[in-house]
Every structure is written in C-alpha cells, then in structure tokens.
Length: 396
Ligand SMILES: *Cc1c(COP(=O)(O)O)cnc(C)c1O
Image (tube, rainbow, N blue to C red; front, side, top):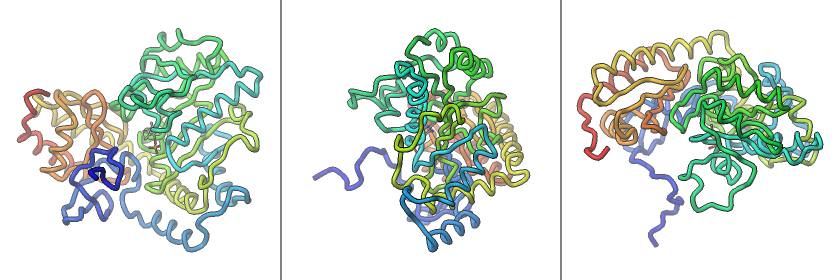
C-alpha cells in the first residue's frame, strides 16, 4: 500500500500548522510563519479573532445544527443583513464556494426555464477562470488541468477570453443564459477585469435579457477595500457567489440574487443539509459585524495601498526576479520573471513567509484584512531578503 490515508490530491508542503494567532501560524515543530495566504483568502479576520471564536463557541453550545425543514431565525437574520448591504433580494447559504457557484448556475438556468425559455441554458465563462472542483464548476472553466480525465463534463458552457468584450459578445446566441465571471480572477493570476469589459457585459445582459453572474468567492467580502469587487465598477450582478472570507475560516458560502433572477427558485428546487445551519450563521454574523464596522473597509484599502507601494519600491532592487504588481486592496499579485511556485516555496521554507502561487507566474499576496503596517513591513523585508539570495532554477 503506497497511497496515503489522506487522498494525495494536494502536493502538500512541509509546513504543518497547529495554531494560529492574528497574522501568524505556528507549525508542529514550533516554527512561526507570517501568513499572507490566509487559507487562500479565507481567514479575513486572521487567526483566533476573539469576536469570531466566541460567536462560534457560544453558538456551538446553544444549537449547532437543525434541518432546513424548520424555520431559521438565524438564517433569516444574516440573509436580511446581506440583502440590506448588497444588490440582492434573497440568499441561499452553502458550505463552500463551489456549492455557491452551483447554486448560481442553477438559479440562472431556472430563470430562463421560468420565463419559458429552457433552451437558454448556456453560461459564457472565461479562460483561466476558477469556479471550484465539482463537476459543474470544472465544466465552467476551460483549464485542462482541472478537467482532464473527468469527462463527460456538463454541457451548457461556452468559453471566451477574459477581458475580451467583443469575443464574449460574439458568443451570444439563442441558447445563452448569461455570463459567469470573476471580477478579479484569483487562481488565474490576480487578473482584474477592465471597467469596459465588466460594464460591457452588464450592458449586453440588459440588452439581451441575459444574467450577469459574478463569482466573488475570492475577490469579495472586503478583500478589495469594497464590500464586493463589483462595487469598484459601478455595476451590480443579477446573481453572485460568495464564500471564502464570508465565514472567516468556518465553511460558509452564499448565493445572492435579485428577486427577478431568483424567480425560478421556488420550494423544492434546491437544498442543502448543512447549508445555513445555526453554527455557520453565527460565524457569518460575527465576520459581517467586523467587516461592516466603521472604517474597516477603509483600513483594507489603506493597507492595500501601503503594501502595493512597498512592493513597487522593492521591484527595481530585484528586477531580475520581480516584474510588476497587480490587483486591488489586499488582493495583490506580484508577477515574477520566473516560476512563481518555486519562489513561493523558497520564501516559505527559508524565510517563513506564506504566499500562494497562481497562474501567469504570479504570487498571490492575500493577508488577513486586519493586518497593520508592521505586518506589511515584515512581509516586504522577508520578500526582499528572500529575493536577494534566491537563484531561479536554470530551466524556469
Ligand atoms: C476558491 C474559489 C471557488 C471554490 O471554492 P471552494 O470553497 O473551494 O469550493 C470558486 N470560485 C472562486 C473564484 C474561488 O476562488
């Protein structure tokens, strides 16, 4: 037997965290790491945030789970707060990002079905998109590394180039349901939609009776310094998937929609055993309490500007390695001139700095949203020290 008890689908590294505190993780062996990966944009409040941990502990002792067959005062309350603070009129809670996207896809298909147009079932999605690992969500990307060997995939997706508005519009036909797009692609390499592109998709939806479905699982929930990334563009979606930061580390996702877009989602059309249970709602409430505090989003934007400045000032000193900075707020990417995975491993193993590699040889820098200037200085210091001694492999 050579297979590991944990199914070996992740190339796991040597860091083995057992404890977290704010922006730091501590390994089994006592090593301390600066965590600028945040569980891939999940630990928005850092590790061990007292308001979040207390809310979870209290709720766990009070009522953890009941069936969605019963009334949900907890779910109604959080859904109402999300409705009050967004474009949405209604919310479905899930346990993950992929489930939130699944619900968004189903909601979009069902909208056209309810309108008597069941043939309008195709969502136009974009290259290097990432929407999750379920069969539905891997069908919604054209990235071979996620799809190979899992065919037959779900029909009903067409693929256009990201940021190519004309290319996307050219794919619209009688079967089109709408567009599914990340305002800022995370896994794809912190690729940010241009205003013309996202606003153009919105306009096309309005003209053709299509739905704009935004996947804000990674770029949403305060990460850009706005509650949602689409707030940067002056547009709103019809349907949106949210997860990662929304639970601050507790598994929670949500599909938000307007009343019109959700018109097909009547009783019996969708469900989830765990989705929106009281424990998850307590976590979601606690995160939202903090994110909606006066000045919180401004703090994210300010820290994002500082971090970006620090990165930009560092680039000329290491221009054999670093190319440019991209992204917004605390969703930043540092583009490398060589393999980003190798440098992420080097910074981790030799400088105790945790980052995430992404497409296009970009390093994702996704710190907890609660960091201060000292963490930024420490990150820049670790990055430049690492860059000074790092030698890219010859075949990069
Ligand atoms: C992480 C991610 C998902 C999938 O979320 P899971 O919780 O892993 O299912 C979907 N969309 C985007 C944009 C993501 O970054």
